[in-house]
Image (cartoon, rainbow, N blue to C red):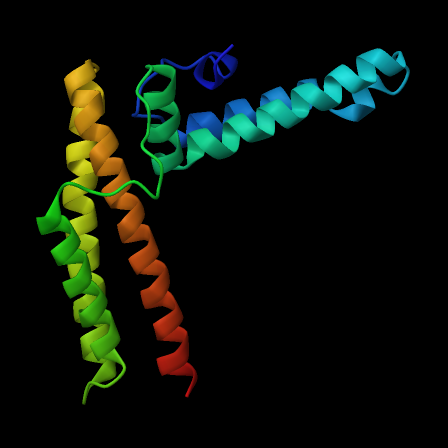
Length: 175
């Protein structure tokens, strides 16, 4: 049973996270250890396993990038390893420029303004890629899934850049 089936959801990228949360609560309640206090050891162990599976499924389905990766996996699309190189050299150059933009924030005459500009740039580019990913996953064919896989890898780069920017924010605004 895949995670979408576990929650009774259609296997698609668009998920109502409020509904997902409600379904999660209901499923967890159904396998809560208190319900199996007087059950056999085997039934208790099964409940614990089911609870762990529900937790794993929920964590993956509530996170858009993890959900996209899972969806691609169940569609049979292989994600390249993180170490495999990108063929999109333009994207790699853009990432280097964004890293430089982030590094320059700290030395700016107006770090708050520079931080805000870097954040806006990252958010804008991330959202553009995310929208492409959403459209590609909705098409549900091997060609669009391959393109979605590439965009998903790119979005992971943006996540790392966001983390770098957050760490920089802590450094700048703690001083």
